[in-house]
Amino acid sequence: MYLRARLFLLMLMLLGWFQSSRSGNDSWSDPAHSQSNQINPGLSGNESLTTASLSSGQYEIFLPLIFKDPGTGPRVCPPLVPQTLRSLAQLDHILIGSAVNIRALRSDDQYAQILGQEFSSLTDESTMKFAATEPALDQYNFSAPDAIVAFAESHDMQIRGHTLVWGYALPSWLINGTWTREELIAILQDHIKTVVGHYKGRVYAWDVVNEAFNSDGSLRTDSFWMQRIGPQYISVAFQAAHEADPDALLFVNDFYATPGFVAAIHTYRSLDVPIDGVGLQLHMYNLQQKPTELSADIGRLEAEGLQANITELDVPISRDTGTMEDKLVAQAKIYAMVMDACLQHYNCTNFTMWGFTDKYSWLYSYLGVTYPTEQPLIFTPDYMEKPAEAALKNTLLSAACPKQ
Ligand code: 9MR
Image (spheres, rainbow, N blue to C red):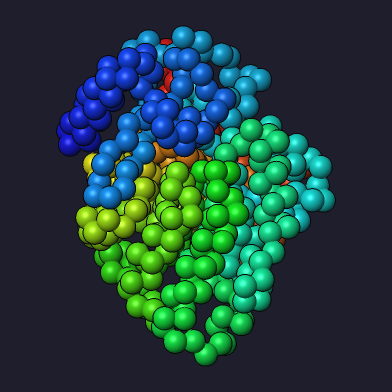
């Protein structure tokens, strides 16, 4: 079924072997690109992520290659209890992440403690966006994201930067100003270079462009950037981000990876637009849905040599019918199925949820519903494990240690 992907993997393995035999190293990691090891510095020895770098036009793609041995599993398979999510995810060579609410991080000690303990990747939910980082032209404010980045670093967590170019979260000076197209291109370039440059070497991956595409791969026309700059804003944004931090992985973050969408990304890459991966948001509103398509989506990206990250998973339940118990079981199944789809593919390297505790979720204000009617995440408001959290742990452990 995944013949193309397997052939591609084989090609990468041979390339890695060739590189390692040329350099005389036992490991396949490419020391010239510390980004590869930065993906999860907690790994070592046989458990390390290994990378190959591929030339694609004028830039290189760095792909963590994840080697699983379903026959024997890793050397050490721990009991499920008392493993953390991040230690189990490490067995499967992926990062597990959460979006972070800055107010909660500053005011709720238990929130901070669980976040640092359970997750190996962190995404700033709001404070890296345009309106927050450049509230006035050429005046930048990094105090909130600096605090989040410092927290992540002190807990050995990787940071996904979110997001540089979006049609929302824009400052009024930008929207209401009178700009020529050339001035807006310069504003966009300056903004991206300043923000990415500020976090150079500290943010390992950026959601450069957010929600820019329709499902058929055409560009959305309701975006400020599309309306004022035109389609070129995509390449302008990626080039600026790449110049500011050539080692950062650069993502398109969107809702899907349909054939049309992946074909569009393919075209950009063939024009040397430095796109390393696609973030799949996955706000999954329908408990009855079977994310069976997801594995195919990730596989399509894999066949293109693109990383796939799950970037914003949450599973709202308030629109569904049934008892609360049924809904929580159905929710857990969806979390497990998404994780399973991610673990099936070597290019799926980061599994991030849009928060972790039902104490804080963007969906309460968005849907106008309160807890417990809505509860889209994996911990209760008092930080107890929900069925979804247990399902994720079981899926992670059984993928890494199938004989247990
Ligand atoms: O969850 C985020 C919310 O707190 C912010 O107010 C909002 C606007 O900045 O953005 C929300 O996050 C969005 C993310 O950045 C992009 N994908 C959809 C997310 C939910 O709206």
